[in-house]
Length: 369
Image (cartoon, rainbow, N blue to C red; front, side, top):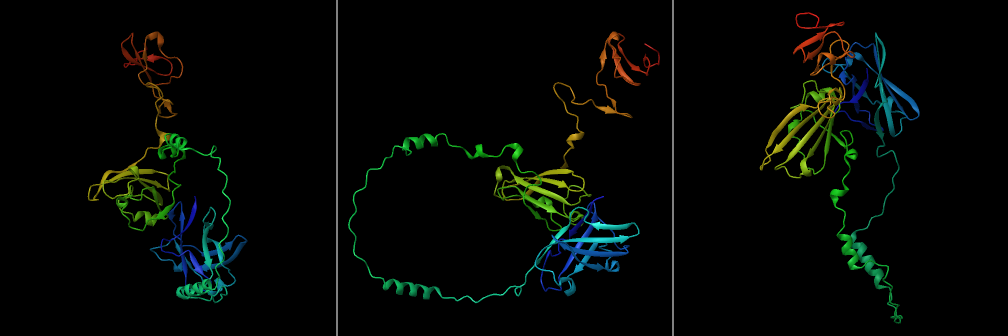
């Protein structure tokens, strides 16, 4: 089970040297689901950087509230900040309970930053001058420069050789075979995917059916916690967890009128993908043209190859028995291999369906035929 450690949406991720009032609030989860830490024997927040472990701070389990039993708050006190220079740091939460020690996150670590304050470095005073004073000083300097005598006229230069330069005719011919911007578009296998577009955090309570895209390019949003995901309005499923959401308009439309915006959402908890289509009229009013629908798992869909032929034979029942479709023929053409008890065959000579019972063919009355 993957253990996760995330900052709450309202928690800072940066603290300045000397600031002893800033607190980080962290969410501990298992597979992005909230974890109740109120029964823990001890909770320790550990800090480190590229050099390794540095310091730790304890959190009293009794300080956790019933409304947020998965949230741990660590305050950067003077003792904790002592000897920590500015830079990038990693943070982990160690929880000890009756089952043992749990370390959040289980994969990698969660990062934060300590910045210098204004007193961390020594400054120096810079001499300033107004723009008007600068202009006066330049004019005064220019007035003291004596004008020199006019020089002699130079010799006439040689006629340049233009044989290696492009002519107007060559230029026109080149323009006639110009490359169009449509020819420069990426191939289908090189287009940005669901996880490749720079993402923005969605505020809690966002109505997903209001995300009309007028930017002229794909936009991406994300929600990193289960609680935030559950606060979304018009979400595709009541079980929605942390997710990534992409929006794109047809033809990269930059107007809110007559806009067609496609929404594609990926639920991080199980990988499910949902899609929806929003449209606007001449006044920008939004219509849900196609509500959220779940995209089928392609690995669980039977595919046809050629006329009425499946890539893989559909199966059913215990042992994944192959499903026979329109298996028919003469008595002499009855199959002898790949059959099993219950296999159906339409005998065109007897003009009736028959079944294989494991050792012989029988009709609907049970008589051997």
